Image (tube, rainbow, N blue to C red):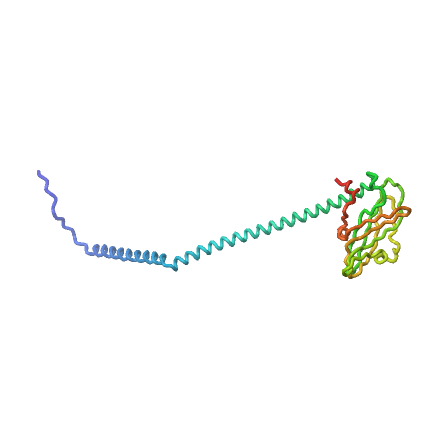
Length: 250
């Protein structure tokens, strides 16, 4: 039995509503595509304007400025930390130098007492200290005298001080009579075998600028011993070592 050929025409029911929906969706898609194209074109046009370019440059410069300010702040903080560290190191070094100076003075003092060599024998002005008296032109004076332990006998005498300085435009020297207490008019008495500290108070004129002290110790039956001391050294209490003390230092 021979097969029949497929029909050339198929009859389907007409769907007018579906066609309208498809047409509506196609129209909406077309309108959306036009809107998208318009938005993209507007964005590109906005980006291409000089104002937009300048705005982007300003924003970039603002970011760079913020970065640079942060870097400057970081460097400033680092510099402050370094300054604090440097000040701390300088303070520590100054304290160590002061300690070393004091130890050297003590070494010279004890070396003298023990009589390390013959050059250090005899009476010596070992230390001179000045301290200001508040609300006055007076100064408290401390003198330390020593002698070599080898001598083995007391040394007796008096100590006086004179002060050199400027009064107006002239260099003058004020003797003990112009400085000392009336109770110690002849000088500060001393008597010791190894060492002794002497205390007194001197008063300077208001218009006098001191530069140097001359300390003189006069032992009975022996030559006087005089030691010049700069005013600044007397204030610090650290005297420049004499030759004998230098020999005793490390």
